[in-house]
Amino acid sequence: MDYKNAGVDIEAGYKSVELMKEHVKGTMRKEVLTNLGGFSGAFSAAAFKDMEKPTLVSGTDGVGTKIKLAFLLDKHDTIGIDCVAMCVNDIACAGGEPLFFLDYIACGKNYPEKIATIVKGVADGCKQAGAALIGGETAEHPGLMPEDEYDLAGFAVGIVDEKDIITGADLAEGDVLIGMASSGVHSNGFSLVRKVFTMDKATLETYHEELGTTLGEALLAPTRIYVKALHSVKEAGVRVKACSHITGGGFYENVPRMLPEGKCAVIEKDSYPIPPIFAMLAREGRVEEKMMYNTYNMGLGMVLAVAPQDVDAAMEAISAAGEQPYVVGKIENGEKGVTLC
Image (cartoon, rainbow, N blue to C red; front, top):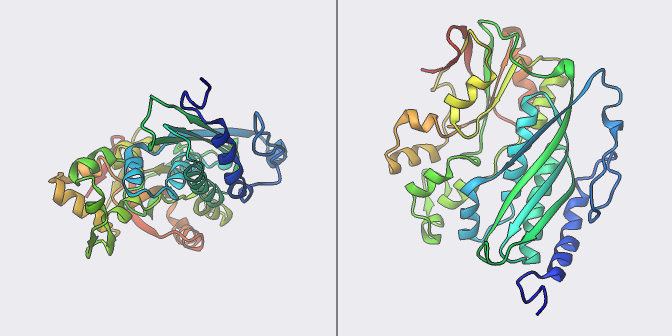
């Protein structure tokens, strides 16, 4: 009896590392001091040595049950982007610049080519965020997970000068809300998605005219990463007063998180186009409108607040970074919360 007979293939682990190295290499920043395969990742403080009060910000997350669709369609090249996005978008909400990322893959059996494909997606997400992929772990769990399944989680660390942290503390009545378009469902609410639609390959590979693609492709569209857009806004000299990543809990949970007491966010539902996947979800699942806005991003992956005089500059900066912005509402005095009208 040996470890391989027990279900853990060490040689497959070595092969996975070799296959993923080329993808990881493309994420490197000059501050990275170690190579992939060591016991830890080292990152130089040179990236933030000139800040007045450098402050670390961090985020950790996974992709939830969206990963089940990747299994069904045997498509694993974008799920890593989702994992990175869920972590770095949270860091960007605080005004932070993501510095580095680590991933954790738990699998029933290590198939090196599949693991390398997953990590390629992680590396693609890191490139979009400007973060270095400095390490990770692939853990083979025979008997705990089915051989053809895996789970993916990640952890990111970023930096922001204390004076630039986005807190929402100075929000004022009349400040304008700008939303950035999502790519679709992103990585939240898939437990409901999987109840609404039959989860088999034939259903997911069916083309829908209203979606302009197959159901599976629409649902697997990777989460948008808004790091560069928010950086572009800052570079344009615009102060983002408050920011919310619209993730699990939709509008009703996430928008209030960026508000101080005594301020209410008023969002106009018809101020931007809602992707057709949400109409299909609501119709096929008979999901009430309030529940849709309480579960999904409904077409806006990020919402930020700026002063009225900064709206045009912020919109231009977001567009220049490749994202689609919309003026979606305003800040009013009142009980802390969000009103959709």
